[in-house]
Image (tube, rainbow, N blue to C red; front, top):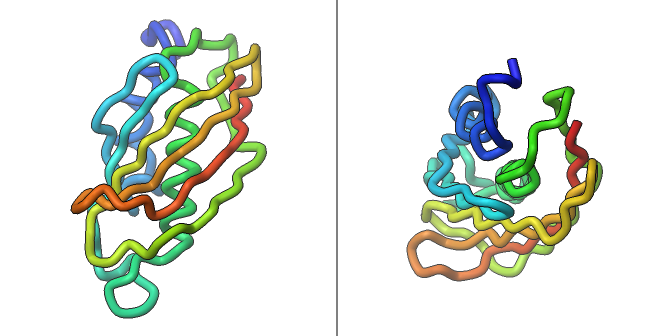
Length: 140
């Protein structure tokens, strides 16, 4: 299966549209390059907690998906095509109210198997920082 992909960015372009959970959140991949990925989650009332405020669990899931995308972006594909988030920390800064979410993810360090990434979650309406996450992802 890995022979059809030339790098991890191609893996993400194929995986993100096919993942049932990612589809549940409505997340799309806008851009991906070596060590960087940008995704978007559209606002939906069923992802809110109170009024039109997007639920922190949905935001945390977006951070996790951002870590995955940044970790894989531009990487050489390992012999076994698998990965897992090994740690994730999310700091919430301001609420996201009735707006699409921009997920901006960067790989800070990419070792043979472990990648350390940051993710900024931002309002697509006015670019307000909603949350900042750091995570470690294990590839292969």
